[in-house]
Image (tube, rainbow, N blue to C red; front, side, top):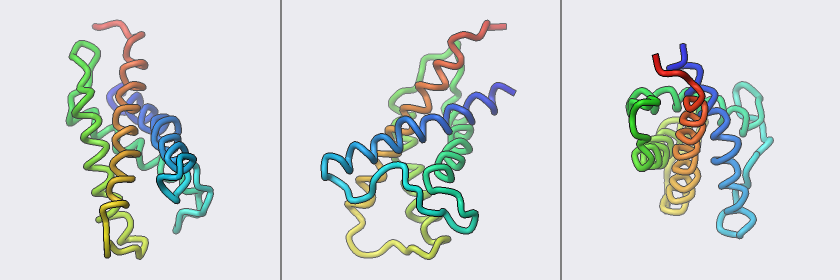
Length: 141
């Protein structure tokens, strides 16, 4: 149960506290146009985008925890979590989720990929921060 619930909650919280905050900071610095915590409806569900993103991020965190074998008795894979978030989530967003929504990759993709990598890499790192924090209080059996 802890191998599903803890990463799920960690991914959800990391989306709110790390991913969306990174976008908001980049927007405040004038680096990107997209701001964090977008309340635009995410179709077809109609949820605010930042909530839909947090839900999807929670599922990705379960996969990340399984692939990186995150456990209290193991060393934390900080760099792999950073890279997993930056590459896997950005690729899934640009090449899977956006085309499903009717947004096709075209033109100069470098700014879109760079912004996605920065925000998603921070999500990966943040998800691991939350996973490790939740696991710290557990007794090893």
